Image (tube, rainbow, N blue to C red):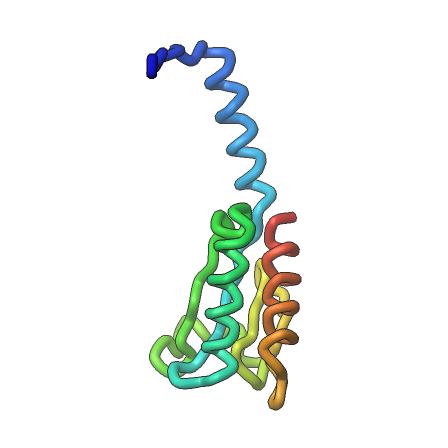
Length: 120
């Protein structure tokens, strides 16, 4: 098999950089508050992993996981906005908070809504 290298012109490289920059500037950060050992938090992590594998665009979403008992300073700004974990925020706005008795399917649907919101 013959492999041919095609140099990228400056015009093409500039257009690609502009598109990438615009795409990432539209993307919002997801902040997840969780507790180690929480079964609902494990479901959310599993759902996010499955969704990222199924849809490559979700892999690009910046996600910060904050363990609320170990990272109290980081969790503090969100403390008045949630009771249950996991809770997910997109650019500081709560979009999901788990409820006791929630099924995995319900959790996964909410996680996907959060990731979609983050994509813009």
